[in-house]
Image (cartoon, rainbow, N blue to C red; front, top):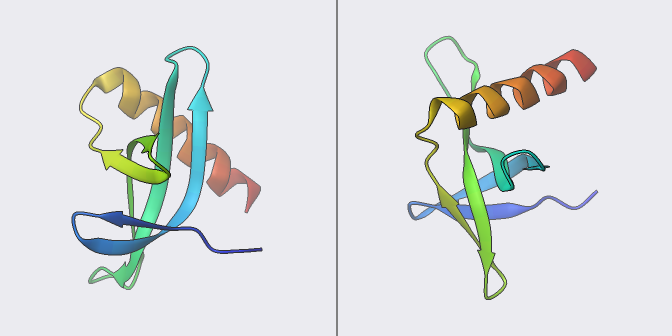
Length: 81
């Protein structure tokens, strides 16, 4: 399986998952910069994304509804591991 890399704020990050939600008509992304926190846990981030001219542009999630969608996706990923 090929790793997908996305640049976020000038940092190369590895894509964990992408998800298109039909209800919100938005693209969601979960990614990591492969760094770890003080508890030695992988730092994982999320956002919205759109493709422009072959490049993935990532934007912060602000709304509570979008956060609910991404947290449900994260739960689903964790439950399948």
